[in-house]
Image 1 (cartoon, rainbow, N blue to C red):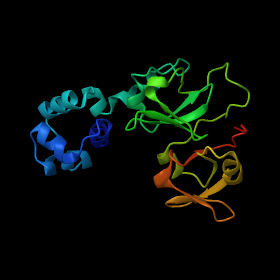
Image 2: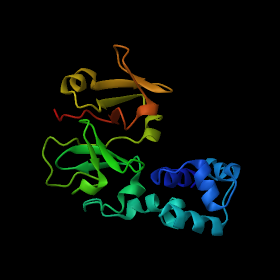
Image 3: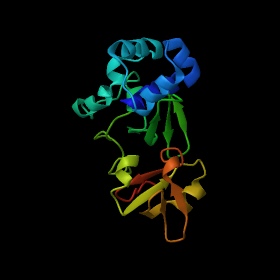
Image 4: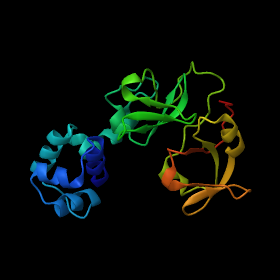
Length: 205
C-alpha cells in the first residue's frame, strides 16, 4: 500500500512538500505513510484519493490484485494502465513493453516509448493471433529475478546492433545480471534499459 501512495503522488508529478501541504499533513507524516512506517486514517485515504485523482482501491493496491481475475485474452483498457505500473503488457504491433504510470507511457524493448493516449490494443498475454515470432514468455518482474540463477536478457534500445550484441544469457547476481563477457545490467534500471525472460526470445526485432 505504501508504494501506491508514493506512486500516486509521482503520477501527479507533485513533490512531497507540496502534497503534504495540500493534504493538510506534515511532510514527515506523508513520508512515513509512503515508506510504510505509519498508516493513514480512512479519512486521509479518501483525501489522498480525491487529491491524486485515483481510487481508494488503487491506493490500497487492490487494483493490481484484481489483475488475476481479468480476462488476459482481452485488450487492457487505457484506464487500467496506471494500475499496472511496472507490469509487462504485450502489443501485437510492437511486442512486450513495461508500463510506466509515472510518465504515462509504455516502454518497449526496441526503445520506443508510447504515451497512454496513443496506446491501442495491448494485452496481459500475447493473443492467439499474434505472430509466430512473439516470445513465448512474458518479461519477468524485478521481484522474480531474485529467485533465478540465469535469465535471457533483451536490452531496451533503438540501436539494433547494440541489442544484438548485448542480448543473451546472463547470470543473476545480488544487484545486477552479468554475462560471460562481464557485461552487466543493474536491477535499478530494469524496465528502462533491459528486460529479462526465463527462456530465449527468438524475435529478431
